[in-house]
Image (cartoon, rainbow, N blue to C red):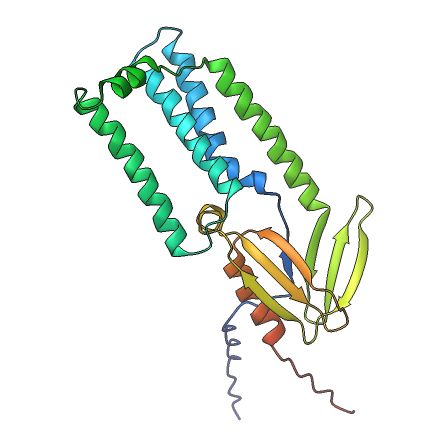
Length: 238
């Protein structure tokens, strides 16, 4: 009498990764200055090798830093909520750049402005750029540390607010939690996928507003999958 054995079949792979919780962190607007930080760091390294002599390269580096910093400050100062605002901004930039090119290539058109433009030679040494980038790096590290001690955690059955050095905790029920996503600034969304996330717990009258949440569309998708998943457990009586 022979026995026939069959190997057990492997379990089927899950269709999607199970999500236990979603972490939400709110950041100040200074984080959007990261392009200026990168440009200043690169400019400082360039000036270390370029030396103290003034040439076309050092002037270009200075103009690049000033333009990037100016655009960054505009992004922090104003909101560009719609495509029309974005289009208007690029039109203004194109007009300014076009005027500069006309003055440079056709100096006889506006001689006064041509002389003024040629007289401007912005330049900074390596110490200036490196000190600026160091200060920005310290601020970014401080913001990151603060965000580690103040954040929200969305779970299937509750909403948790972690805050304080000693990890103080506030709990809110997450069933029937309503979520609103707002993208108030196109540039902020382009830089870090940032936006405003508004949470409406069923037990609270006031909404919870989280400003400048990174990669907000991805976070919203994870929360929707987390709260939309319905798990039913069946217990067998033995």
